Length: 71
Image 1 (cartoon, helix red, strand yellow):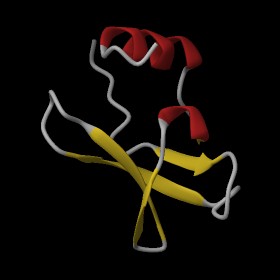
Image 2 (tube, one colour):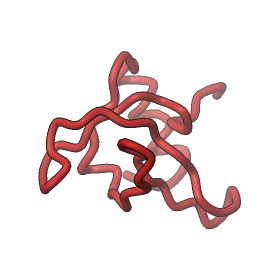
Image 3 (cartoon, helix red, strand yellow):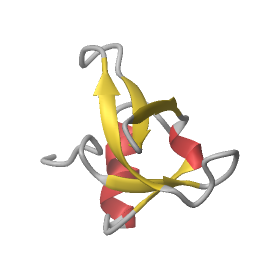
Image 4 (cartoon, one colour):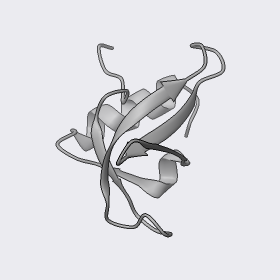
């Protein structure tokens, strides 16, 4: 699969950064990946369930989640 959420545009679904657009960033290695969203040069810890990806095929994202153990 040639898909990764790193670098994808997204916004936060809930909380103090609700509806603010940012870019997904990966912290760590392939085995210990932690994802953050960068909004206005601020790294914000998020869970994948708390973000909405922009312009990403839902099926492709679901397959990526299953492949990487997030489902």
